[in-house]
Image: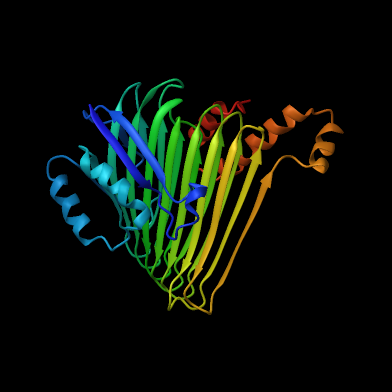
Length: 364
């Protein structure tokens, strides 16, 4: 067994008051060091090159890692140390042109299983690629899952990364995504967090190219004793770059959620724009919500905004539901599920959408 103890997970780029206890997360776990392969790749077509951490693929992946642009953010330091300290399983996907269908990576974990993986996803110039990652186990399973994904979108390419986390109620999950966008490149991330006992989600993006863009849509439901630590940070260094980040979720029972959302305008990124929006429904008096929206400005000619809608169902919303014979508890269920399904509709995999519906009790 290996003991993990890390105290700077998802570290915010600039510190707030220490007494708020929101600057960083703490990950402590005792795990089985026997990392088992559980990832299955399906849907790859002739436009995609796949390298696996076996045979000749080992050398190819090592060479790719050497030429990746700098995309590491301080909030990823602990995640990198964790996956590098384990026998992490690696693979790489390279899109040479527009891929005709999504590539699906199924992570089917079993109770007590440990898994650590590193993925590299590259879209060559003007290529387009959609990657779906599905983390699944049985509802009451326990275990440890650490995933680090690096995206490199070359000039005028597009990468859409979709991650759906449906792990068992006793899992500890660490998910670190880093990206780098060149001129005119577009990176889109769709993420749904529903499972695990404790989840650390970190997404950082470096918009280095002219008119590069980053868009994220995140949905989550935290219930029972679940604890979610979520960090999004976009760094603008290129001119006329654009960020749009949206996160929606519901807190139930004794659950906890901490969200850090940062748009960092660096000197020289003139004409850049950024917007982040958060919606959190507090559906329990004992749930705990913490939010840190942050805009950092080192350049004058930029436009940044953020907004939040945090709280309970208001009187007008309740009146609307009650007038149609829907009681308060049912209204909360409808609002909770609608936030998730609004994001799930962006997933081009009907089977996975149906799995999400079933998970949240929305199946027909």
